[in-house]
Image (cartoon, rainbow, N blue to C red):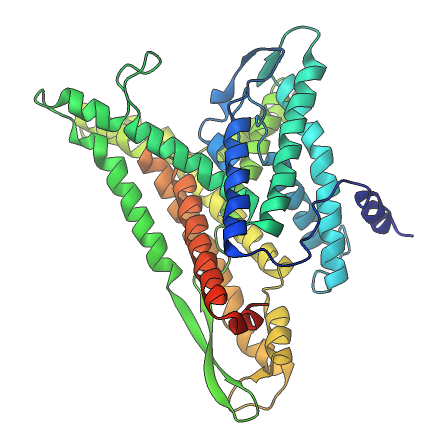
Length: 453
């Protein structure tokens, strides 16, 4: 028995959400998704026992991307789950681990090992959060804090399984969209409270009405709407590859969307950045390594208020002096954009190959479904060669597009939300809408269900 087979066998002893015997109907899927989302918000409102203080501001808006809330049961959020996927993707892609992802057995082995690694990382990251100073437990109760944080991430791991098997979409996407949406609407509509006397943007605008209201307050809202429109428009952009179906040669098209990789590369990239920031905090006092990790942290930190800070600097000092004053920040922002693009391309390529969306895997699917390219003989290799003209290029272009959109949004939305969060949320909601429409169609016409298997 190989080492990977042994890990897969160990993973088999972990608790598992049973696959439903019959496919749940749409109503049941909505109920399970709603239950998972309610439990997620409930976990985010349960404060850790034995905690003296926390420094959640170190992660800032990365918390919403990780579906975490430092100081609560979901302090680590989906970080361990996503990190497990990142580690395995990099290991398989570099050849360190030999798993054939085009084979169903290989994919099952990958998923089993990923789950086992995620469970281990739940405890590991809980320890990192505690001993890095992100969480400050009462002396003698560090073990209790670690167990609680690990337990919270384990709950999210199994809630993700519940949503994947009984609900709509994935639990990870649902938690990210829920967290970002909650923050967005709270910052926009929150009333004045003791902790925030000015309230949200709407309350601040009304309070300043008649006293020279600052209309720049609503600039992030306008930009968020623009980003929303761009993403929805981009979702409809695709290249149609002509295909022929059946013995009579019925014509059709196989669409390859611009956002072929969806928003997965950004999720993985931002989760990687968050984990690198944690390691930078731990290693800051170690010679050489601390300096290296400090440089990595500098290059992977987004400037969330760059545009507004730049406007203030230019308005107060003039154009050239303002640019000079903001020079170091602008250089850092450019470095972040370049690093984000490169990482997104890497994860985009890995994700397409791992998820069975590469040219070879898609060619096999089309061939097995009786489809072929018109004007060519029925050969899987021909279909693959045609797909290789489009899929790799669109994968890279789509990864660059989502990286640029996320970075631009981060630097313009300020406190309202992160561009990455808006990008992910819109993409997740759009796909939930598509899945909901498909479920409604299948419910109305059961025979169509065979086409979506």
